[in-house]
Length: 388
Image (cartoon, rainbow, N blue to C red; front, side, top):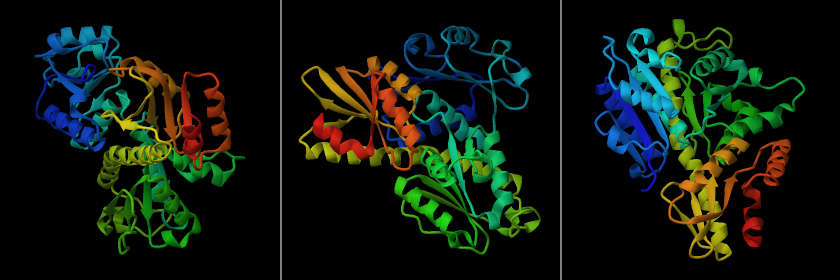
C-alpha cells in the first residue's frame, strides 16, 4: 500500500508495549481493516521507514530509572507535530523526558490497554474522537449507580449522556434523548428487575436494536439477561460487586471501584466492534440500492465505497456512524489526495438520519451547499442513487 498509518513505539519497550501492539492489531481486525495498512515503527527502523507526510501516532514508554531512549527520534516527531502519548508507571516527571512535559500522559495499567489503543485509532480516524456513551436505566431502581458510572466514564474522557444531567431546561426531552442515543458509540444498560416494566426503557432498547448500537448489559443480582439480537456484551453482577452488598436501593447502592474499572474497560473494548457493525449496515443498504439502479459499487479494504465513472475517476462514499460534522468533511477532504490509484471526482459521507433532530439535518443540508465533501442521509439513498 502506498500510504500507511504509522504506529511508533519509542522509549523503554517491554512486555507492556508488546501487549499494546498485539491488542492494536486485534482492534484493527475487529474494525475489518487490512493489517498491511499499518506499520509498526520503533528505534530500529525509524530512520528507514518513518514518513513525515503520512499519518503517525507515537507512544513513548517511560523509564523508571530516568534512562531515556529515542530522544533524537522524539525531536523529529515533535518538529513534525506528530501526536505523542507519554506512558508512565508511577511518576510522569521521573519517567518521562523533559521535552514531553507539556504533553498529556497516560498512567499505565493493564486495564488501560484498551484506552491507549483506542487513542491511537482515534488519531488515525478509525474510531470516532467523540467517545460518546449513553446510560440507559430505570430511575426508581438504579439512580445512584447510574450517576456513579456517569462520573467514572467522564473521568476516562467519555462524553456521557445521562438524562438527569445532559438535557438543558427548555429542550424537547424525548426528541433530544433519541438524538443523543443515535450519536453514541455504546449504550450501558442497567438491567435491574424493573427495567423492562418501563415503557421508556423498552423503547430505548428497541431504538438501540434498530440503530444497531452496541450494548454493555449490566445484569443485577437475582435477575436475568435480556435477549438482544445485535451486539451485546453481558456482565452479570453479584451481591459482592456492590459496596456492603447493597444492590437494591435507588439512592445508596454503589459498585465497588474494581467493578467500575472493569465496566469502563468493557466500554472501551466494545466501541470498535460496534463501529464495524454499524458501518456494515450502511454499506449493505447503500450497495443494495445502488445495485438496483445498475451501479457497480466496490468496497475497498479501507472500508469506503467506490463507483467507477470512467477509467481514471471514481466517486467515493464513506460510511459515517452517528451524526456527521463539518470537521468530518474537513478530515476526508484532506484525505482525498491519499486515496490511491485514481482521481476522486466527488466524495460523500453516507449516514443514518433516523432520530437525528431536524435542526441538525437542516444544518447538514446547509453545509452541503458550501463544502466540497457532501453528506447523503439514509432515507435519501434511493432518490440520490436514482438521480445521480
